[in-house]
Image (cartoon, rainbow, N blue to C red):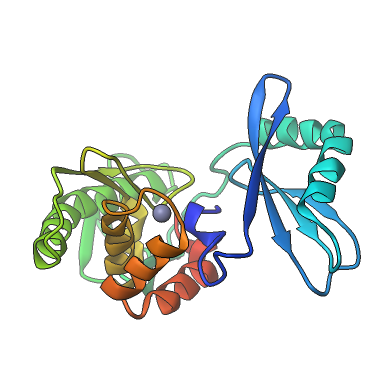
Length: 242
Ligand SMILES: [Zn+2]
């Protein structure tokens, strides 16, 4: 899983973007400079965007040209990605999952109960895959806890939030609308508190700057001085979340 904020933070100035039209489908092209790269490299990210590495001495216009010349390859990769199952992994008993930033074992108990940490969930059937029921439980927990925290932080920083939704987004941690609705991914319940708070503050900062400009990141740094640490945590653990 790849997430929108994984691309820019830390070095927001280096990322440049463009759009490619593949068939009728607009595909985001991220251009990333890499001093040690020797040539242009194109790849498809898990979120469906294309990414081209610009080597030392290269340029964005050459990168776009390179991507254009490889659109056939990109189209095949997109088709392949679309045909893959979204969620191939199951969680049998004994699987380790992240919960509030800690690794926990899913233990199957008596009477169709599953336990992890202090949480106990009842299984509806004995299919062996605990994932659906555990995920539903985590989503419910997130739905209970996240809105209160968002309003708490919004009040603290005097930012106008109208509504909070907790959603099952596949490719992002959160979003913010111009009307003041903040949506968060329930999977953040698997992250530690400081990471969840960072994501909330990131979305709150969008109430002032609806982009990922330098001014936006300055606002993030003001609201959440240790945001880089949270970004790092997310990068390192993204594959363990959901
Ligand atoms: Zn953002």
